[in-house]
Length: 337
Image 1: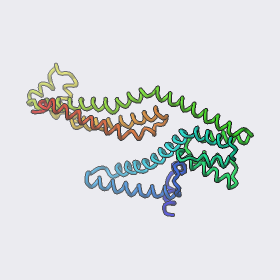
Image 2 (image 1 turned 135 degrees about the horizontal axis):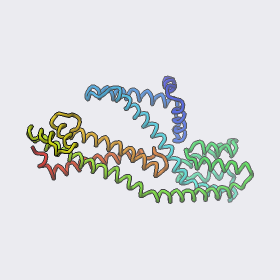
Image 3 (image 1 turned 60 degrees about the horizontal axis):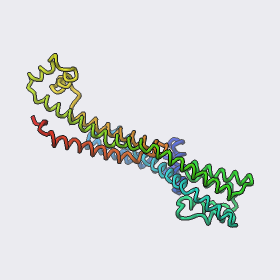
Image 4 (image 1 turned 60 degrees about the vertical axis):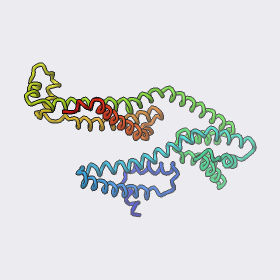
């Protein structure tokens, strides 16, 4: 009861989406209890993380608390959503073969519920369970149309739901079920072939985006941050008079005067450490948007690219620091004052 009361604090549209995802994934648990536990545990965990980071690293407690909670709750929500969509994509892949098998069984003289049960093969994965459940519902007195609609409600796939709806409407209109199943299977195969062809045409864009985010950006940031470090080190090694002449010299460019004044202490803000930190933040942001773009191009949904964020980010950061180490090994003498 406590978890169910806590779940009422969650906005209704988020709670409804989580309930649907739990049904799609096949997790048989009370949705309100799950939401209440998720909220309570997320708040407790976020409080613990925030208080520890505040005590040991003096990080802002409210900021860390909010970020930790959003990451925990958002991560759980995304996990459910991605699992549901992955299950739907798998069902879409095996659906034409399943329809062909059901049609063959019906043509061989089996009843519809028997054909559904016999066609439930282990290689069909989640569809095997749905076919068995549908045949059981029909044997228990449920209409075939209603059983098919229930199948569509348990799989997060527009193609699967529309297929079940078309089959139900075809049965109501008195059509031949076997012929309808065969035609639907052929149409789904053609649609999948078109999607695969379109995905192949956009594969070059995916490669270019990945190379730019995981390779190009880290190399450029690594080189530029090292150049700033060398320039700041060389300017800092100048004597007071020499650096003053550079700062006031009429021949010096405006950008050079700004850098010299920052190094000499007349202006604050830019430093090699700042450039390195800025590069790391920029790589993090670049990895996020690159991954979302890959998801949008590959599957049509940005959130499907979230799984690429850790890989792109790790590759980018490793390459960034490797470039800096290589440059320090080659041009290390320039850093000596």
